[in-house]
Image 1 (cartoon, rainbow, N blue to C red):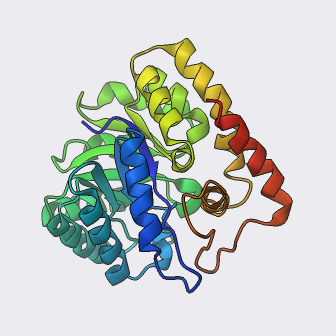
Image 2 (cartoon, rainbow, N blue to C red):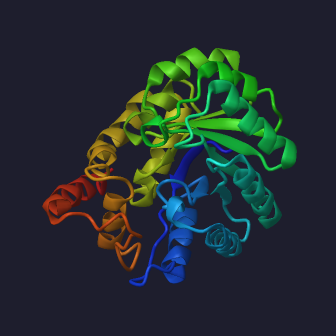
Length: 292
């Protein structure tokens, strides 16, 4: 089971906007050495919305090749077009990724039944295990608990990443789900408590720059060791918060550059590098987390 610390991996970029493959290789090695459970590649933090499908698949292929089965790979598989999500999932399955991370359809504003049929169609067309990704603050689409319960009956739907930060949703949903259905937090600030209350892990932005501390915190939280997990999490809390002073992944890419985990802090337009007014704030959070 994919439990614990899963990094929502950045996609490092060169000055011309191409993927920085040298930095990408370094990031994969960094997470392997830090006991990160899995890489979530080309999700929100990976800037997937700025990649063509061909580029998307090439990056995943590169990560699979670098990883050499040493770490699990979860690949962004979602789209607001059901046909595109099916095609992408089929190609990812051929590449041998562990699972897809399938965001709710954005912009279209589907009904709840439309959401169910969207995911059902994807699973019927492809055997790739899928993790639902619910991030209504970005998509304008919130998948209901009732639909999650229905989707959990489909063999290919293995879990959900809930990025709402609402811990009540975990406690309300968990009793109605199969024991092997995976529940991930997509909100670093509440991720520790999410695991202490029965969640299986966190798909983390913070882990990009504090992977070892996140891995230790997750292990302790999953073991129910509240005091020890909370002590680490408290030292990471400023980072959990300050990596969102501007839209993710702007601050975390700047932080990765400061730690020499990436050569540049480049993003693809329309996102731009972290505004100078926030540099000291994010630097201070990194310094505090270094003691975690």
